[in-house]
Image (tube, rainbow, N blue to C red; front, side, top):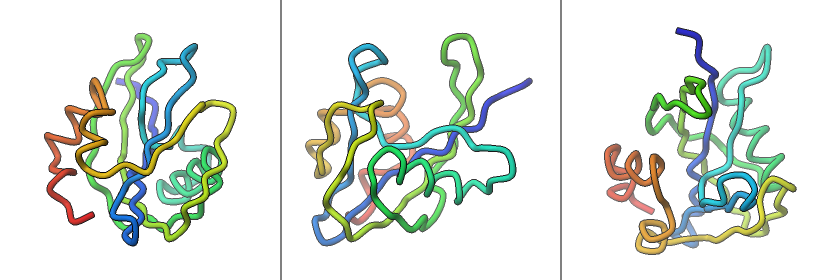
Length: 132
């Protein structure tokens, strides 16, 4: 099975006790998610998640650990998601053109905002039980 590898970030700001959620353009899914994207040739997984977060949000993050991995099918292609817990002390977000909005969300707000596979994965992998 050929699959694309994508890193995603759950970005935690411990002083806010919130995670960052970004919203895709309505032309491209339109839902809330964490930043991330494809791993480029020669990159480690950690380098990829740091680069993607910086490109999509302008934030510098420190990958703390892998939270979970999941397999999904998007537009007929298999995608392996490697999801990292990333830490930042920054609050100011500069969105890329891929996204139209962002929110620093507490647990209750993120449960309301997230849908589909991301929402299922957060519940299945105990993200809401983590100390925020």
